[in-house]
Each structure stands twice: as structure tokens, then as C-alpha cells.
Length: 210
Image (tube, rainbow, N blue to C red; front, side):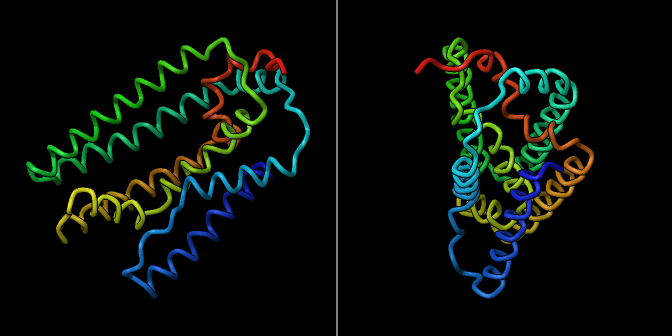
């Protein structure tokens, strides 16, 4: 793995170890404000340590070379998420399923807005900060996939899951984590770190004007 990916990975591991200890000793404590804050903190730290300007041509060439592996990784991640969603939906009662369908609709609308913004920004070059954020974002994905308790607690609160449902959802989340870790092990690190940047390749052709 690249040095940056290793540092980020071990940061996540250390955070999870502390969180697990807290859950064990204080089971009624609220879930800490985690993955986005953790990823943002790391990205800001990395940005402050590196003032070197991105070699955009080199980065574009690397993405082009790794495009098949990157697309395969993204597709498999999406399938892991989709499989969990399908199995989770089967566990819900009619009232819970109605709320789940509403949330899915809201998410679809949110995704549509993101795609529209992407299209409108297609001709706007990425800033150095945007490139950095896109390269660090996959570590948030690692956190979300590699943890069980935070997501279980959110789903329990959101859908008022009963104990039997909670046990089933924990099993699904554990299976999802196992699949994702296997995918990480089988994927070359650059394909992971560049997975969020690859769709933005058109916006790296030129530097933004100051």
C-alpha cells in the first residue's frame, strides 16, 4: 500500500479500537461523530503537510492506466452496498418499509442533484483542495464498510428495529464488512485511492485560473 493509505488505514484501526472499548465499557453512550469528521481531519492534516502542486498530467495518465481496475472496484463496492440494502429491506415490517422506501427516494433525488452538478461543473478545472479531498474520500468508505456498531445503532434508531431485527442486521453488516475487506485485499491500492477521483478526470486537464 502507499504510505498515505497505510497511515489512513491505521488511523481508522486505532479509532475503531478506541470506539470498541468505549462501547464495551459504556454501552449506552451515543455514537461518536465519526466517519466524515475522521476523514476530514486526516485530509486537512495531510494537506497542511504537503504543499507540492499536483502533477495533473501524471495523475490523469495513472487513472487512465488503472481505469479497468478502478471501475471494477467501484462496481463491486456498489454491489456490496446493494446486496446489503436488498437483504435489509426484507427484514422490515410494512411501516418500516414505507419509511425505508421514502429514504431511498430521497437518496435517489440527492444522487440526481449530484449528477446534475457534475454535468454543470464538467468544464471547471478541479482545485488542488478538491483533488486532495477526492483522494482522501475513499478512507471514509473504508470506515463505513469496516464498522458495524455505528451503522447498526443508526438503523435501529431510524427504523425502530426490534431485538430480533437488530440481531439479523448485525449479521448482515458483519457479512458486508467481510466482503469489503476481502475486496480491499484483492484490489491494488492505487485503484482504491483514485476511485473517487477517476470520474472527475475531465476536470483535471487544466489548472483553475486564479
